[in-house]
Amino acid sequence: MLLMPLIAASVATGQVSVADAADLRCVALFSMMAGEMPEEKAGMTGAIMYYIRRIDGRGSGLNLEAGIEAGISAVSQSEDMFKAEAKRCGNEMVVKGEQVERIGDGIAAGPEKPLARK
Image 1 (spheres, rainbow, N blue to C red):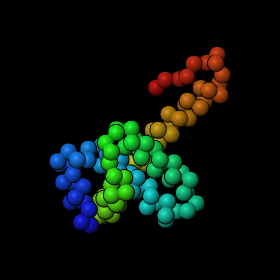
Image 2: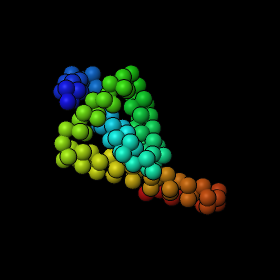
Image 3: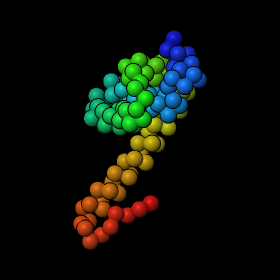
Image 4: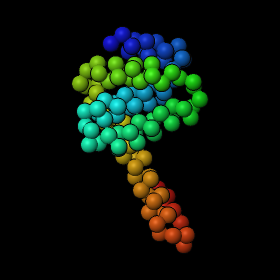
């Protein structure tokens, strides 16, 4: 549990952005869930990669291993924290999944039908 104060301090000092810290909590959450639900590992791995690419895309040079450890510490602090992060991260994945589905449907419809926008 010592890492949570470290990540909080890092966010406060600007060493880890708020966005990176939130994404690290999602990586941690999906990593923990993949370990507990092996039948869902492929989906969890996709979610983990999505959040890691978001972090990488910001170019912060963040130490992912240390950040993920801090994220695990953060979401493990309480059942309420775990549930709140599971809801937030899960909702983000639903929105992204729906977007990918719409893109796939547009591609499957062929070039005569433009991609639907929402």
